[in-house]
Amino acid sequence: MFQTPILSVAIGLSFAFGAVALIASTLNETLASLLKLRGRVLLDGLKELFNRDAGLLTSLYTHALVNPRAEPAKPAKQADGSADPSSAWTLHDGIWGAVRGSLPFSQIPSYIPSKAFTVALIDSIGARQRDLPSIGNSISKIVDPQTKQALTALYLRAEGDVNQFETGVSDWFDHAMDRVSGAYKRRAQLFTFLFGLLVAAALNVDATHIASVLWAQPVVQAPNVMAIPKDAEASIQSLQSLPVGWDVAKSGCVAAAVRFCGWLITAFAAVFGAPFWFDLLQRFTQVRSTGPKPDKNAPTLADKAAART
Image 1 (cartoon, helix red, strand yellow):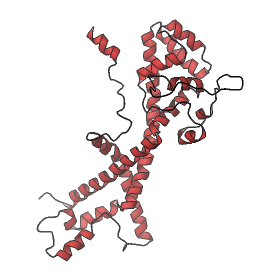
Image 2 (cartoon, rainbow, N blue to C red; image 1 turned 90 degrees about the vertical axis):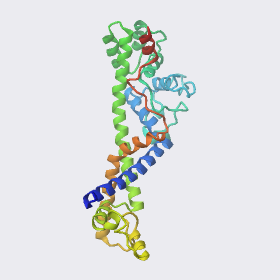
Image 3 (tube, rainbow, N blue to C red; image 1 turned 90 degrees about the horizontal axis):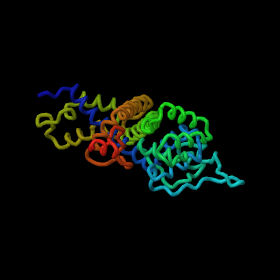
Image 4 (spheres, rainbow, N blue to C red; image 1 turned 120 degrees about the horizontal axis):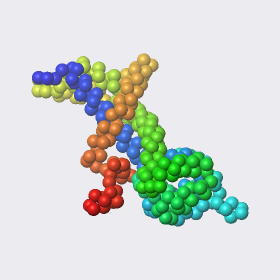
């Protein structure tokens, strides 16, 4: 009763785009899991944050609160026995960094809670006591000027309150991770587009062909008792005209160009629809292999203890 060509085209395209988006996002998540892309993007962001200070990064990434599965720090040594501040693994980012320089720690986390980062950073710079004089003395010994300037500014704005200093460090980390998250999302969108284009080409999910077939053929639009042919051979012929799959009879440069444009439309639609379908799938099964992302607004154990008193 309510079946119209426009509604049929909209429903058919939505289903096709959703299926391709789900496949592309699953492939993207599989690739991210195999290559540990989330952890490597996070590591690259911290390299920029600490100006590629190998000693500080190694100490931070081997801290039990940040990376409980990592082995103790084993920094590279120079000829005189001192730590090498420019290890090879800090000079190259991404997958290329994994090839050019092996990491001095065995595991890399995909997420780091800001509270854990704050405690680990204070320990990594050498402050073993939770008071501002000890923290200020450790900050003054930092060699890298960029990290020293940032922590000094947060130290001065704390005005003698160690809680305010820790909050400032947590906010500094969260702002930096927002930029890292944006870079990862742009990279994920690129991979989702490429996977969507690959799936569209492999299955010939041509958006233009789907729209034209659903608009023109009542059998494919709204199959019902009156529309289905009575003859079995005619029914088989109608199934062969479904708008997904390869039709070797259609060839030529013009047909190939139109088909490629349809693939591009499907791939672009998959990019914008992948977050929705991926989040919907997450409600039924755990697709993200790295576990749930930490909630910035989640109360800590200290906050819960303070609320009970």
